[in-house]
Image (cartoon, rainbow, N blue to C red):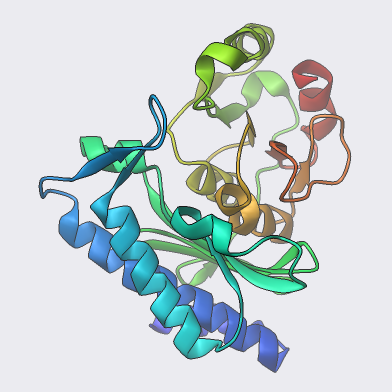
Amino acid sequence: MDRIQNSLSHCTDNEQRALLTAACRAAVAAGRLIRERVNRPHTITMKGVINLVTETDVAAEAVITASLTADTPGMPIMAEETAASHTLAAERLWVVDPLDGTTNFAHGFPFFAVSIALLDHGRPVAGAVYAPMFDELFCAARGGGAWLNDRAISVTDTSRLIEALIGTGFPYEIERTLPEVIRRLSTLLPLVRDIRRAGAAALDLAYVACGRLDGFYETDLQPWDTAAGWLLVEEAGGRVSDFSGGPYSSPIPEILASNSVLHPQLLARIR
C-alpha cells in the first residue's frame, strides 16, 4: 500500500486523507477479486439488449460495500448494481462502479476498472479508479492533486485538435442515439489525430488525467461512471463540463473532459 501512502502525503486534511484511504483500499480489494476471476467462465445476466452484468460485478460490489462500511460507517453508498437504495440527494455519499467495462471483462478484453468517489453536496472530494489488469491505481483528493500509483499526474498541453487523441463511448441505447453518435464522430474525426473507443468511461477519464488521452466525451452516462474520473481530471489540471460548456454534475448525462486548452475547440464541434 506504499503507493496509497505516497498519494496521501499531499492530503493536508485528516478527514480527506481518511476518505481517500477508504476509496483506495476498497478499489484495490475489489480489483484483486476481479483479476482472479477474469479467466473463469462467467454467469451473465442482461439488464438490456446489450447491457450485461456478471457474477463478478455483484461480488466486487459486495467487497467494496463491506470495505467502505468498515472504514466509513454510516456513510450512504450508491453502487451500480443496487443503485435504487440511495439517491444523489444525500449530502455526502459514496458513488461506486464495481466493474466499469463489464462487456470488456466478459470478453476478456483487459480494459476495465473499479471506480469509487465520495460526493459532498454533489461534488467529488475523494476518488479512486483502479485498473486491475495493469495494476494501476489512479486517485485524487479535492485540492490535493491527482496520482497514478506513486507519481503525480497532469493533463497534456496539446493545443491543436489535429494533434489530439480523443476518447469516446457509445450509449447502450444505440438505436435511439445512433444519429447523434455518428454526427459527432463524422464532425470530430477528420479534425483530430484519432479517436479511441475502449469501453470504460472511468478509465478513459483517468487517461485524460494522466495525459494518455487529450480529451474524452460521451453521453448517457451514470453518476458512478464519471464521479471519480471527473475529480481526477480537474485535479490533474483539466476541465470537465457538459456539452454546452456549463458546469458538470453527476446527474447530467453528457460529459466533456479535456486538458482545458482544447476545451473550447472541442465544445464548438461536439455541440
